[in-house]
Length: 273
Ligand SMILES: [Mg+2]
Image (cartoon, rainbow, N blue to C red; front, side, top):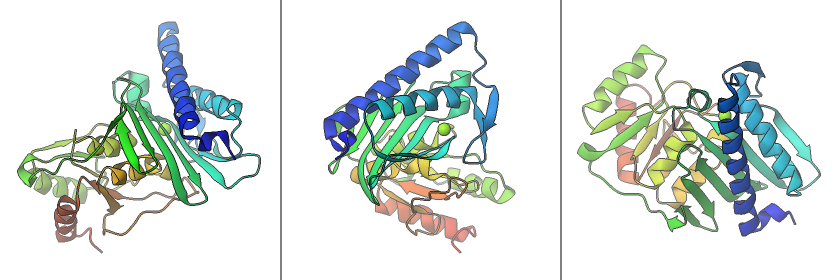
């Protein structure tokens, strides 16, 4: 059995990866290294920045050193095979690359471990403030404390969105903002979904671009364990997509009532079909 299937070992390896990436970024900034330099094209079809390349290299090195055997699907390099097993790690070394290279303090490491298609463990760490989210054995925690989403009436709801790319998207957000307390665009999708679990925000919406599986492989099960609901914009389940160029438009909410309310509004604005 893989060492990383051990609950404590998974946490310890993920924590080490996050600490090392954090140190790397601090050192690189000190040296004045251009973390925003484009160094290639990622498996997701988007540019790989120096910040992504540095973090991914470090993460892969530590996962390999931990003796992981199986498949790693990672944002920049795509699918890598480290020996044969039915385990897969979904890795986003830096969720929120732009925030990371500009030192806007909202970016994360995201790691999910699956055995075949069954979720085993998930780890998301906000590398800027150290918040550590863990999903394992039916429990989601933040810094060791179990999480339960907070139900709020629509007038108190806060929603994080991905910036729309269409006129239709902006029209929808205009209508949405009149029904809730606040909207935010924060720039790191895994963190956006994860912070619903702790009640920092109440929902997440990506209308136009869609997320890659590495963005939600850890965040989705973590939020669901805390009582949240995740679907596509029509309310259908989202799946793991090994091809990182395949994207899923996502609605995530703290509870079924809010999820249904948002689905209804989406439908009203032509997102339901
Ligand atoms: Mg990334």
